[in-house]
Image 1 (tube, helix red, strand yellow):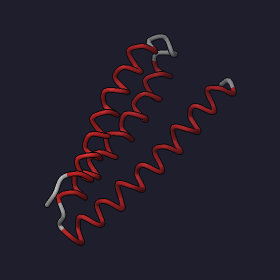
Image 2 (cartoon, one colour):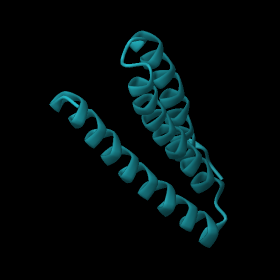
Image 3 (tube, rainbow, N blue to C red):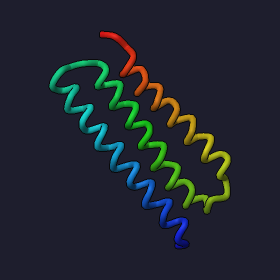
Image 4 (cartoon, rainbow, N blue to C red):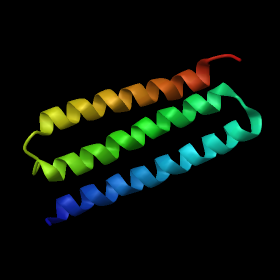
Length: 93
């Protein structure tokens, strides 16, 4: 594995760890308060983490040959995740 590939894996795992921490915090807050905003926040961060991990795995499986498709799918899923995060912040209860 080249150093750039190793860095890619390290950064992907860092993003996944941070994102899953946010999911855990949001789920715990939802369980305590039953606020729908926390539910939407957990969905958003779950999608963001899923996009990062799926892109990393897919990149190695396809040997980085379909980068445009991988990045397009990544950005689509990540954008939907961020829309859930934004909705959780802006939606009034």
